[in-house]
Image (cartoon, rainbow over all chains, first blue to last red; front, side, top):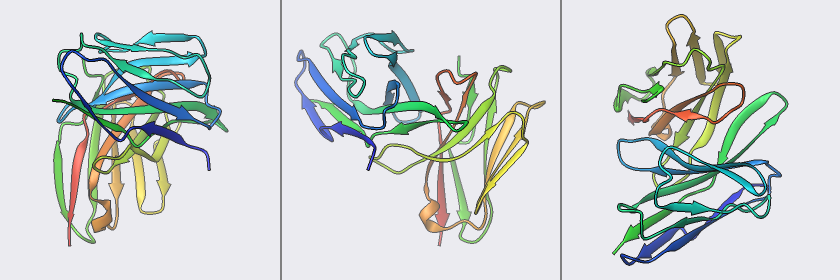
Amino acid sequence: DGGITQSPKYLFRKEGQNVTLSCEQNLNHDAMYWYRQDPGQGLRLIYYSQIVNDFQKGDIAEGYSVSREKKESFPLTVTSAQKNPTAFYLCASSTWTRGDYGYTFGSGTRLTVV
Amino acid sequence: DQQVKQNSPSLSVQEGRISILNCDYTNSMFDYFLWYKKYPAEGPTFLISISSIKDKNEDGRFTVFLNKSAKHLSLHIVPSQPGDSAVYFCAASAWANNLFFGTGTRLTVIP
């Protein structure tokens, strides 16, 4: 079955450490996205990539970095520069198919700073 | 500035009754609208969509209405079931560009 896999599901980070969240899709989607969800704030876009080797900042990119070396993979690194990294992180991918457009989401990674 | 707004953070409905979730948007260039459903600790799942050339789209118990002049869309769930209890996000895009999401409405269906 095609889908998006995010790992790990839970991640703990010490202050000052960088951590990388994995996102892999086998849907052959061109575009991939990273969102952050905080209580009462909905989904906020961190980074997105429309094609391999290209990505753009979203609304809250500070303290994060990404790479898109393969179509299937879009890892997100939460750096020590991110002041409030504790949140639920969602990866998504998209493509136009038969006139339908929408995102397919992974199951998320909950990051906690300890 | 929030381009897609869901002004009701929560809604409680009795089982079997209708649930109406509302969404407003500000960007007149939006031409495609979607609703997603999200359970705790899971990713959102696609529920139903509508393009700007329509004013209604129906899929089983779920119907989305679009009022372009008012820049307003709504999701109707009838009859509501306890399994519908979740957070619902509306989203909008212009010409298949990035989706803009609302802040979500938590629906609780009371048995």
